[in-house]
Image (tube, rainbow, N blue to C red; front, side, top):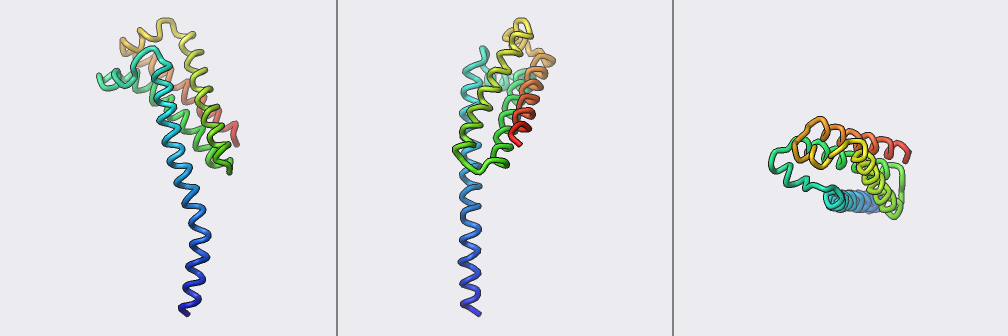
Length: 144
């Protein structure tokens, strides 16, 4: 009986360990890519999202949250549909580019976007966030 328990334990270990390692790799990779994206996005925009959020600006919160969620949705879809971490990294880069292009296009649609955000225009912040979220959903869907 003890031999059977040992054999079952070894087989479970061989099955569980690769899944656990993949989980940890993708989780930490996703967190790292989200952090990198956040830094790049905040550098890319002409206003300091974190300072505005700390000051209680809802517009900056909505805008930045939409970008983060949109980006994370693409990473989640990539983790689901692709087995290679190299592909995951490539799609993370593509998702960053899509979000940055989306911001540029949105900033062209809204005159004085920087000032609107500094003035805490909730409607503008919500629109910027909604565009980023929509792009993330579309991007994630295209990976399936």
